[in-house]
Length: 120
Image 1 (cartoon, rainbow, N blue to C red):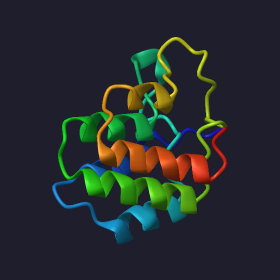
Image 2 (image 1 turned 120 degrees about the vertical axis):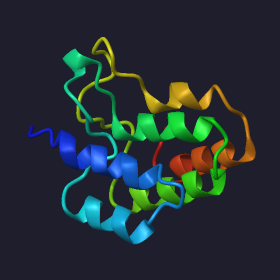
Image 3 (image 1 turned 30 degrees about the vertical axis):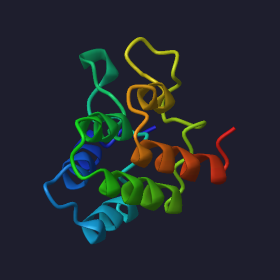
């Protein structure tokens, strides 16, 4: 699989901007950015774009944006049960594990979106 680290990193930057640009986020997804794609080689401690975005929103900044971003990712086919690289690699964490660090309403809303869209 072609891991477009640069495009995935642009996706992270667009999603974690002070005011996320949803049009840009959708354009990046249309160009091939993958929420469950790596932002760098996992040998260099790369992580999935979605995990980096979750980390950003765990700090409590604009949590409603996180729910909207998750909704957009689902619209473009994100399925956390089918990552680009399996979760058993040394540095790759299932995004659900990160949800355990914040039980705020926005994390529950994002989790509900995932459950309503095929997460088992």
